[in-house]
Image 1: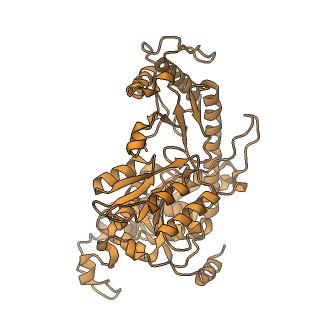
Image 2: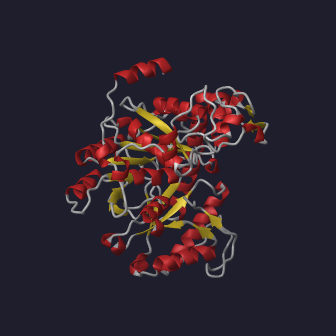
Image 3: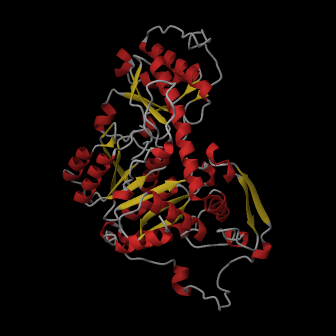
Length: 494
C-alpha cells in the first residue's frame, strides 16, 4: 500500500473515541513538561541558550559501521554494510550528531516513520488518529501503560498465568492483579464478562493486560474469533486493552504429521489479526518490541495508541528514559529503512517464523516420545514456549512435590521454569493440584533437546516413585540423585 493510498484511507476513517475518563486523574488533563510549558519550542531563527545541551563537536563518534547479513537465504542481495555519518544524514536516517543529541519523548523521526509504515501495512488500525511512540521495550511500556489507567490501590485484570515482569511492575505500582481464567486460546471471554459483571471493588475495573499471541508462559494464541469476542466484552464493560505482543511475528506453521513433511512457505501463511486491527474504538494500547525479532539488548520497541494517549506517553518518556538510545534507533532505522527495506524486514520475520517452527516441531516430537504418561500439553502455534502439565501421580497433592521436582531436575542437569512465578494467586489457584513447567525451545541447541527431555522424564519419575527405563539415545545411566551432567537450560529469563 502506498503512502498516498494509506493517507487517503485514513482520511475516511473515524477518530478514536475519547476514553480519557478511564485515565487516572493525573493524566486526564494533558500537561507538558514544566520546562517546555514555560519555554515553549524554539524556532529556527532563535539563538537557543535555554537548555543544558552539549555542543555536537564534543561527541567523539565520527562514523558507525556494521556488517549486516541478508534477511534470509532467499534475499542474499540485501546483505551489506550499514553506516551512520557524523554530520550528514545516511539514507533515510539522521546524522550521528542528531542521533546522539537530546530529543523529545516521541522517538527519532526516521525510526518512527518506518514503524508507522510497518504498522499500517501489518495492522491497518481502523481509526484515523493513531500514532507510534518509541519505547525501551515492552517491560518499560507495560509500566507506562498501566500508570495511565491505574493508580495505587486500583485493580487491573490479568491472565491467570502472566509475565513476571508485568506482575513485578504491578507490585511496585501497588496495583492489584485480578486473574481471569484461561483455556488453550488464552483469556476466556465468558469468564472475563462474568468477572466484570460481578465486580464489587471500591474502584472500577478500567483495563486488562494480556499477551494474546504465543502467551508467556502458556504459549496460547487467540484465534480471530476469540479476539473478536474478547474485544466485544471490553466494549461492553468499557475496558482498555493493553495488548502486549512481543511474539506476534513468531506465529508458527501447523505442526506437520511427519518430520519429513515439507516446510511451509511462511510468506503464504497469514498472521492472525491483532487486537489493534479490530480496534474501532481506540481502546487498544499495543506494545511491540524488537527483543524477540531483532535482538533483546537493543532495548527498543514501539507503542501504538490514539494520539491523545501518545501525548501522555511522551510525557512519561520525557520524565523517565527521555527516549530509547538515539544510536540504537539510528542503527535500526538505517537497517530497516535502507539496508533491508520493508520487504527485507518481512523476509527476516518469515525466516524467524520458519526457524522457530522447526525448533518447535523437533521439541514437541521429542516431548511426545519421552514424556508420554508424565506430561500433557497443547502444541503452541506461536512464540517459543511449551507449557506442560506435569503428572506427579500420587505425589501431586504433596505441597513439597514441585520443589522436590525442581531439585531433582537441578541435580539431573536440566532447568525449566515452574509455574510459581507466573501464577497470579487467588484462593482457587492456590488450592489447585495442577503443576506446570515452561520449556523455552528458543535458546538451547537442538541437539540438547533430547537429553533435556530424558533428564526431565527421570526427574518426574523419581518424584512419582517409579522407575523409568533408560532410552536408547541417552548414555547417562546413573541414578538421578548422583548424576552431575552439564546443565541444560531449556528456559528463559523473560
